[in-house]
Length: 182
Image: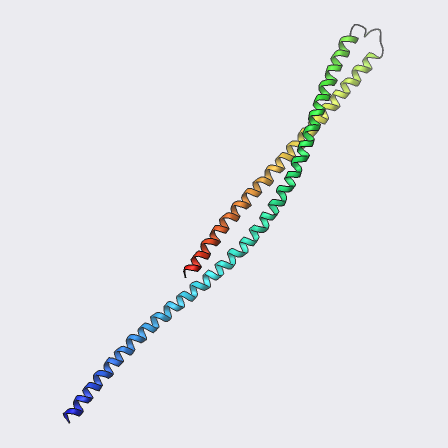
């Protein structure tokens, strides 16, 4: 009978150890399940963040394409600007020539002004041409300024979009590295 009692005591001790082991393993399972749930939530959150970043990258790439197109258009404006500046220079030279001719005509015809009825008309025509040249010159100067302003705005937009693209690209790279570490 002592053997049976010893055997029962040993079985109870084994049962208690097994029960303690089951509780310990059950506690570990719960901890692992909680960690697994936390990791799944983190992965879901990071996946959502990845989708948002990818859509922002696509949006910024579209903006960069627009900015590049605008920069190319600005280059065309630059060529037009150069053409206008050449025209403006020619008009200024023409105005200087007209002014010189007016002075020469003035010097030649001032003493004989009383004798020639045609002289006032020459002066009037020269003055009129000079005024027209000044008006054209002012018009082209304003046009050049407007084109330069437009070009500056496009360059500013392009730089802003390039910066946003770089920032988003860096954020996406960091995010990809973070996902790789999981």
